[in-house]
Image 1 (cartoon, rainbow, N blue to C red):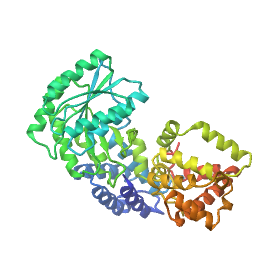
Image 2: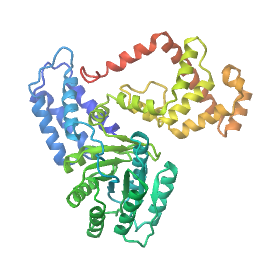
Image 3: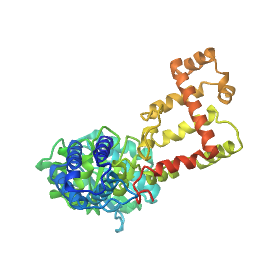
Image 4: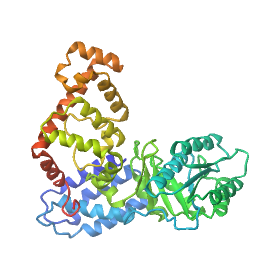
Length: 450
């Protein structure tokens, strides 16, 4: 989401090389570039002005120590200010109420409220061991009710049925009664949205909110909505006692300004980021980690947490033991790695969290579709071919390509990728991992990578 902003900020601070002190004169051009980068990222103008003023105030007169370059010194100041704007720390949901604790989702149509409701339910079930009931009061879109029911079945959550002709308050009261009777810990209400803010919409969501007695009222906003999102956030904040924000579709072509603006405009914390359509693609919002991502420092902590949740430790251990014994990294091993990478959202999602540039020859846009295609190629091989890739001649390549429904070039590309990974595994076995970690830490300003 922050790729463009990250690139612009990185280029802006390069102009400070060789300076021993940050002054009004030598940071003037850099701050202009930072200002343009923020505006192009759709950050609201008042937020940009305040941000630039605070950074300039802290930067001017700062002595650059021997361990820092001037660019790193300014990045540290920008990093701290980004964290301050987005909130000092992650604020989780406050559900310590008499069950059921009601979480109400509000926002414009198309922001992803229905999908987010299911993602949030899954997260609460798996991480907090909560029993969750889902209900939709979006009587204007019958498809939304059916979609939520399908998603509830998928994640094995409770669902309160509703008809398009019902009153939203009646649905809310019935869902509350069901939740109490069946012992649900949390009730998540998916409310109706419109293409724009209007009085009828606000009146309806206010009635539902009063009836539900929600302990958490979350504004769901599309990260690609730009300034419209800021205006909508302001309107919802005036109409409802918002307790937080969820920013969705952060995996798309978003510029990232919404995440910086909405927090400042509403004063309410961003609690979660939604990325992608997958039901597990919802992560807690950590301002410090996101600030590091914006500044190209990666987010290794979030990556480690994701790996802990999604990677099969037993399989990883088998591979590590195999490599330690000096056995080769074959195509069956590569298939296992591709499957694990698919679980993590593809190579692009992985590289986004690492504080390093993409190695030459590695396709960072390798998404889940490409991963599945490559796994199909390996599945089309015989066990012997997977174990001994050098056996695969042109005739075998044509057979494998036909079996996988791809071109011979795709088979060649996979074999080349395997060869590159095989070389990398050998290096890591000879202490290369330690060197790689040192190189990654060298990309961070002192104090930010510890």
